[in-house]
Image (cartoon, rainbow, N blue to C red):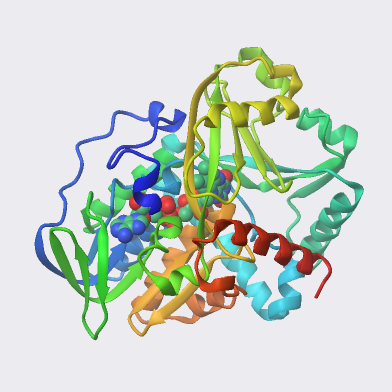
Length: 435
Ligand SMILES: Cc1cc2nc3c(=O)[nH]c(=O)nc-3n(C[C@H](O)[C@H](O)[C@H](O)COP(=O)(O)OP(=O)(O)OC[C@H]3O[C@@H](n4cnc5c(N)ncnc54)[C@H](O)[C@@H]3O)c2cc1C
C-alpha cells in the first residue's frame, strides 16, 4: 500500500496534459550508488525539497537530494496549479487558535510564499506562465457570509484588499456554473503550469550545485549526530536531514504518519474548447470551491478545461478516473458536458486533520515539512525555505510555521482509510460548532 509504487509507472511522469505540454523529459539523473557525504540530505524532489535545497546552497551548504522517481514526479508536477493566498483555514480561525501576533506572522509567510513562487517562476520557469486571479465559489448564503467576513477582516487587519466578494449574478458572469450562490475573486492569488515550474526550479537547484539523484528511493534513516540515509544501492551520511516526501512519505517515517496521511486527487483535460471556453470562465483565472469533494478548474493555454476533484480517502486510484471527474464537470458546467476528455490523471498529496501543514523537528537534526492539503503550491516553497534557514542556524520562521495546529491522527496511522474519512468529518463538524 505504498503510494510511491501503487498507481504510477516507476520513474515515469503520469500521462497528464502537463507532461504533454512540456518538452520530452531529459534522461534521468543517475541513481545514488555507494556512499556520499553532505551537510544536508533532502528526501523528496518536489517544491518543498527543491526550495530547501536552493536556500541551503545560497548559504553555502553542501546538499544531496534523493528523489524516488524523477524531480517533479509527485504532487508538484501534477496539481491544479492554483497559487493560493493564506492557508486552508482563514485568519479569523487562526487568530483564535494561535493569537493575533502569530497569525500575523503566519500571514506574512504565506504572502512571502506567493512572492517566492513568482520570483522563482520568473527566474527558472517563465514558460510556466504564472497568471493572477483565483475565484472561490460558495454554495450557500452562510458560506458567502463567512467569505465576506473573512475578506473584510483581511482588508481591515492585514491591509489585504485584493479580494472582491460577489453575489450570485456577478459570480455567475465570471464562473459560469448554475450551482453557486456567489463567490469571491482574489487577484493576489494566481495559477501556474506546475510541471514546467518544478522542472525549472529543479534545473536551477542543480545549476546552483545541489547534487540530485533520481530513481533513488530512501528506505531507511539511522539517527545520530551524523545521520545515515539509506537507499537500495547507496547511503548518504549527513549532518542534517529534511524529509520532504509529502503524501508519499508516511509509509517511511511513523513520526510523520502520526499527523499526515495521503489522499488522492484527480484531474481531467478536455479537448480544446475554442470559443466555448468563454462559456465556462469569463477571464483567464483559476477557480475552486469547498464542497466536501472540492472542485478546482481553469483553462489551459490551448483552451482545454482542466477540471479536478478530490476523491474518497483511498490510496489506490480508481479504475476509471476520466468518467468520475467528467460526470462532475458536466454537473457543474452542463454547457460543455459533451466535451471529450483527452487526458486524465491522479496524484497523491499529504493532508492533516486541520488541513494545515505539518512543519516539525522530529529529531535534533531531522526536520519534516508536508501535509499542505490542496494549498501546497505556494506554501511548500516557503516551508522548504524556512526549513533551509533552520538547518543553516536561523530557526525563528520555522518555529512560526510549526505553530500551525496539527493534531495527531486517531489510531496513529493512515492505513484505516475509512476511519480517517470519519475522523476528518468529525473534526470538521467539531470545528464548525466551535468546540
Ligand atoms: C491532483 C492534485 C491537485 C492539487 N492541486 C493543488 C492546487 O491547485 N494548489 C495547491 O496549492 N496545491 C495543490 N495540490 C497540492 C500540492 O501539489 C502539494 O501540496 C505540493 O506539490 C507539495 O509539494 P512537496 O514537494 O511537499 O511534495 P511532492 O511534490 O509530492 O514531492 C514529494 C517527492 O518526494 C518523493 N519521495 C517520497 N518518498 C520518498 C522516499 N522514500 N525516497 C525518495 N523520494 C521520496 C516523491 O517521489 C515526490 O516526488 C494538489 C495536489 C494534487 C495531487
